[in-house]
Length: 329
Image 1: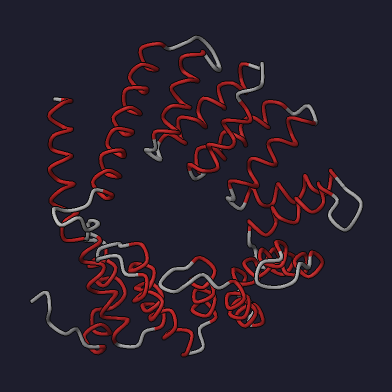
Image 2 (image 1 turned 90 degrees about the vertical axis):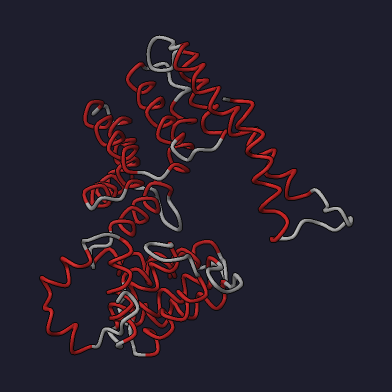
């Protein structure tokens, strides 16, 4: 039954409410129905299915297949599909990294007023990646995206105004643009808005916005924020630093766990927490040992002197990890 073909007519008969209920049953159920929509030529389903394949949501991760579905949507005239093909070329999802190709796809979608494509193209122009560096044109694109409500683009305009890129710096104007980005939910905008509020003496409000940023930001951003904030002698900012390092440790890497453990041991943001620090250091050591065993298993040649292949690496790695777990039990 799971492999039974779902026709377009069947999808239409279900109606939006029933289809939403089926998708809400879980990732695997959602994958079946979204794939059915994609196979029946529904553009939004093709875009959603491409993302599910990229992320491995409800199905095996397959970036090349994801790119094919984005390309199908793009061929049908979808600006979002064209933008996603550009993303694949920029980041190497299912295809070699090719920023020049990414620029071409972003440019096509940007001309169709896709705000994400405008933002993505601006980022490459600002970095001179895939096209000559062009800060002025990047700012034009950020402004177009921001007018469509793109919060991250608003934050980037704030950065132009704060840093004085190609124009005199205007801190108050930067504050207004950061506020737009922050209110739109961009964690970078929230952090920068809070940072400028702190600098202007609006301490409590600034701390609130920086806290919101840390709560929603990705671990990589939290790692940088925590490292910068922990140098402050202000206890409230120290608490933010500790929160940022804890959020960064959710990455599960030994490096982030050690940074968080060090902050706990040193009493960043308050009193030292030696028990919590020891526990976190222990987690970091376990992960370091696991990673070492994984690397050794991957590098060790087989009985014939050949480098490990996918077929030999799996059983060898399994044995190594079982032995390692036995030492920790």
